[in-house]
Image 1 (cartoon, rainbow, N blue to C red):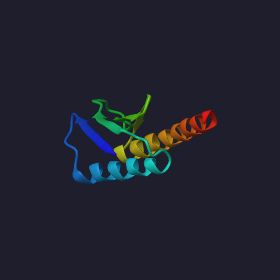
Image 2: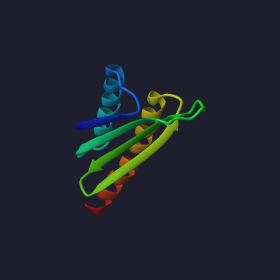
Image 3: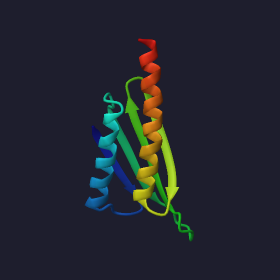
Amino acid sequence: MKVNLQSVNFNVDQKLVDFTQAKLDKLETHFNRIIHADVFLKVMNTSGKENKITEILLSVPGDEFMIKKINKSFEEGVDECVSSLERQLKKRKEKLNTHF
């Protein structure tokens, strides 16, 4: 799957890119028709600890899933987004299988 990663207000390091790619690749075990994923990592200018925004836009044939999480670290955000996407992809797959 093709992953487009964009970082806003900071420079992303390679470890975070690899981590995100590995997590998103696992989604293909649940739904093998994923077209691509757009990942947006943003840092808010606030004094709070939870200032990291993770957004993932996942494109599948005929639909798109958008997940947005705010956490203390991008790793936590990616984990939570991927688990939410897993649930949504399983529902989508079950819905498709009942129609055929």
